Length: 319
Picture 1 (cartoon, rainbow, N blue to C red):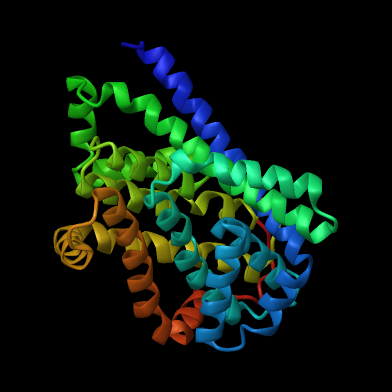
Picture 2 (cartoon, one colour; picture 1 turned 120 degrees about the vertical axis):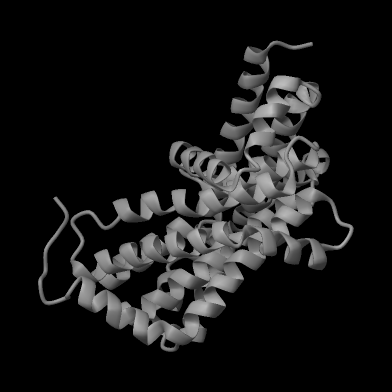
């Protein structure tokens, strides 16, 4: 049986590959869309629903809610997007970030060689910049699944380890699981990676549905760290976007933790007989969609509340 150190190293290798793939995928997709992304964010966010749809779509495209929210903060800070429009984009980004968890839940890591090889062929044989960029996208998807595949196989020898299983079982306590999820996200700076790890452990029967959902809830809070950093030296409107993201996620998580029992019952009812890994992916989507549907009718109220909390006329910056 491999030692804990060798398993840890393989997990870290898989995690590093996954994070590199997320960054590569975001860069490749951004190069395909060029500067149209900021144009879409500016032009099609005049209503709450349209802002949510744009935020969702662009986040699915970039596979990074943080990137979309940071771009939104930049646009608001520069005066190119009204603060109120930005709130809908933030809500949509929360839905869009669940797209990657649905992909991970498919557990297609064993087939990662297919997009890896196809991506390499397109990168070298493509006759235009578009097709070479598409090759980068396809290759990055393959790399992402390869990273998950490595992490999954790295931990498999310890599926029956009593100490590890006892610790993982402890994550079923909602607050403990959420704290661990938040800490992991702070360290790796990617909620997608945290949720992906939880889903991978669930697919190996090492993590239960309550524990996976608790970790997912914590990841939702941890992802606010980099968007808050983007508000450094920002004016009040840019700061309000970052603070709104934090407060919305924090309140959603508190409600989710308080109602985690009924929420798990709903997930179990809707998911049916699918695997625990897919149930966590479904829970991620349901949780973020529920939060957005509750908040969307009150966007004006929320915007007014943020205006009172951080008045725009007092232009300052964080130290």
